[in-house]
Structures are given as C-alpha cells and as structure tokens.
Image (tube, rainbow, N blue to C red; front, side, top):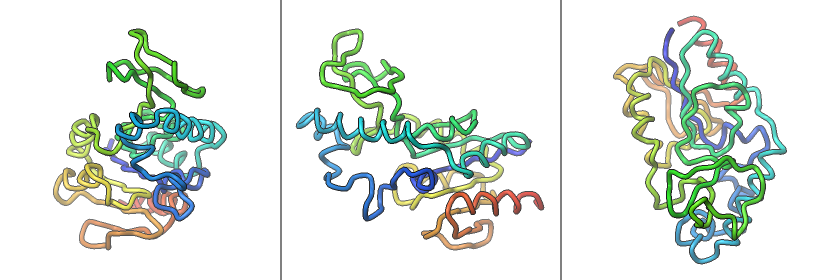
Length: 226
C-alpha cells in the first residue's frame, strides 16, 4: 500500500472548537507566550502555567474529532498512513488513527521535572504538589519554546519514506516542523490544505485553499484518480 504522510497543525482541530495559535482570539489570549510556554515562565510562575494547561485539558475533553480527523483515519483502509502532528490534542487518536507522532507533546500526559522519560497519562487538573515517584514536581508533557523537539528525528525518517505528503492547517512557519517538507523524496506529490495557504501550487505541489474538513474531502477525491 502507498505510504501517505500527513502533517497537521492547529487548523486541523479548529473545526472541533479548539482555538488556533494565531487567531486574534486565540489560545494564548491574555498571556504572553513567555509566561505560559517556556521553561522560564514555568520557573517564574508554575501555578499560572499549570492552570493555563488545566484549562486547555478541560476544554479538550469537551470537544470531539471532526470530519477531517475521521477522514484521515479512514485512509488507513487503503493506505499506510503516518500522522505527524504539531497539535497537543488527542483528536487524531480518538478518530481512529493508529500511527500518530506528536512533535510538540501531548496535553493528556505529564512528565517529571527531574526525569524527562518519566511520563504519565493525565486527564485531571495538574497542581503544585503533584509529584513523580522520585518526589519531583510534575509538569505538562509539552515541548515549550526554547526546548528540543525529541520526536523530530523520527518524523524526518517517516517523511523520507513518504509516497504522498499532505499538509493540513499549518502556516509552515514554525520550525523544525516546517522543515519536514524538505525530507520527502524528490517529486513526491504534496497537497497543502489551508484556507489561507502560505504556499502556491507548482509542479508536484497542489494547494487546496479550504478548511480541513472540506480540504480532506477534496484530497480523497483527488487521490482516487492517481
């Protein structure tokens, strides 16, 4: 079966009701990114950071996957599908996708501030005083600005085996995720789905200027004729 690699960003989950990073009324409204999404911010005001992600976690558990998530999962019937997401939600998994790489961490997991390999599933609020088995404070399992992206090498390896690449709902401005497009084999068909695309159609790159749910429908129709 052909290997489809799908790279998703915040626009993928927007139609499920999760706000996108760059919206005027977006996820970080009222908070400077350095306050809630950096190690320095966590050190300066851990209670603020924990509550910020507690709110995100509560919201995530109140929304559902949208048609685009389900459409991607359904592709597994006819293709080998790898999802590489910049999103920290679990909507791909809930829709049924089996192979999902989270570049920027996972909201429903926490990890030790002492041992980065000590990761736990976590659906409730995370509070000061919640500690790992070695007695250290737990923190959100999120890749904050200024931190390494540990899954990027695995993502690169996956992209190097892509026979089709689909990019959905991302500005392609955030690195290292934006660099993944350069690792697919030369000539690989690339589809870019976004209502405000930052790329233009050319040669092997097809732009679908739609939101995720409409764009996935169009993509599925297009690959039927390949």
